[in-house]
Structure formats: structure tokens, C-alpha cells
Amino acid sequence: MSRRRLPPLNSLRAFEAAARHLNFERAGDEIAVTASAVGQQVKQLEAWLGVPLFVRLPSKGVALTPAGQRYAATLSELLDELNEATARVLRSENARTITVSTLPSFASSWLIPRLGSLKARHPDLELRVSISTGKTDFAREDVDVAIRWGKGDYPGLRTDLLMEETFFPVCSMALRDDPAHPLREPADLVHHRLLHEIPEGVPDYMTWPRWLAAVGVEIADVEHGPRFSHTFLALQAAASGQGVALATNVLIGDYLEAGRLVRPFPHQVKGAYQYYVVCPETTAERPAIAAFRAWLLDEARAQIERDGPA
Image (cartoon, rainbow, N blue to C red):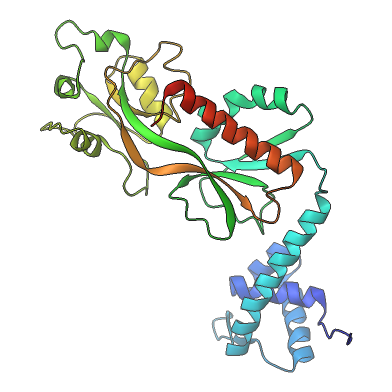
């Protein structure tokens, strides 16, 4: 085998960071060196390659040359692969500590209340819960498994459907049995205040107008009523008798079991997004990850069997 001709690793790291930021100072902050040191490392790499990688701009910024663009794209992929390979070595195949990333609402309403079951089934498995609302970059983040809310489009990852999400009205028992206007069917909602959850930047989210249209009910002033940015806020308002909220089978928590909320009628509508368990294909069968994934799917299956299919 011929001897590899590789430039200095420090120069590669400095160049890759500078190429992403197009700024030597921000690149230096990322790799904990000065902007001057980044510049020196880039010059060293350019001299080694015999090709200019950056064009220095009058505004003191930089732009990639065509050769620099091609080199940066390939180098970023290689460093990501190196980072992932290193992480796999550091986390031995028999390691029993895993990190799961998920949404704050799912963590508080569904995952955390079930951790006792995980401990009983796998007493030696240690779980770290990380909260995030964006997609997980497994190559750059110290995350083993992610639980995400979406449409299942996670290319290159092992993806398992965890739960389908359905929406249904909930209210306090007193409001359901209101003497003047009891809630017995969806048309009765016209007499009550609706509580709205409005997540930012989520198209096709299940709103009251969508839900009512799906069950064939028209309410003239359907947009009237208080608005909340999180599910748990709308549920708390409903539990205190302030109106009727739209709940989901995934995030309802123990409100129904504890009697703080009731479903006034059985109508429900499937949402546009579902919950998925995702992880890299290369680590999906690692014992701790496989055990955690199996436990998640069993817990979801048990809830579906208890509550009935969506």
C-alpha cells in the first residue's frame, strides 16, 4: 500500500471551520485558537496544496475559491465521519449509558413518567435526556437516539414509528355537565369558549378550525378564545374550567386518569405529524440502544392497547 499524503490535521480543522463560518475569528472561537492562528494554519495548508483556498476581501472577510469550495465540501463530510467513528470507539459496544434527544412536551408528558418502567426492565441502563426542538445531527451531537415529531422523512437513519397522534376535545367535568349547556356532541361546542394552542412555525398543525371541519361542525366565531404556545398551558386552563382544549393522545399525560380532565365525546381526528424513534443505522443494534428502542416501542404499544387504536 502506498504511503498516504495527508496535510497537517490542525490545518485541516482550521480550514474547515473557517470555510463554514467564512470568518477567521469565529472559526478560532470554535477551535479555541486566535483568528491569527487560523490564518496561519490556512496559509500553511494552501502552501502544502499549492492552491489558494480563500480570497481575502477588502472588508476583511474571506470567500472560498472554487477549489476551496470543493475541498471544504469533501473535508466536512470526512471530518463528520471521523467524529462519528471516534464517538463509536469512545462509547464501547457494551456501554450502558445512552443519550436521548426529544421535545420538551414529549419528555415531560410521556417519557419521564415512564422512566420507572425502564429502570425496572433494564436496571443497569443509564439514560440522559436532552431537550431539543430541531433535527439531531448525530455526526456532531453527543446523542444516541432521538424521538421526533414529524412525517418520518429522516433519510439515512433507522426510523421506527412510535405513535400516531390524534386530537380530541377535553374539559373539566363541571364544564361537561354544565346545566345550561352540557357537552354531549361536537355541535355543543358552539356554547363554550375554545382554548387554542398555536405552535410557532408548524404548518398543518391541528387547530380548532381544522378539527371542527373534520367532524363536520361549523362555528361562526371559531377563532375567538385565549391562545397558548404550549400544550400543557392549554390543558391547565381547561382543567381549571376556563374552556375546552384540544388534547392529543400522546401529550395528555395523566389528566384523564386523575380526573382533572374528561373527554366529553369520543370524536377524534388524526394529526398530520406522528412520533418517531430515530438513530443512525450504524449504532441501532448496539445493545443499550436496541434495548431502549425496544422498550420505547413496547411502552407505546401498551398505551395503544389500553386506550384503543387511533
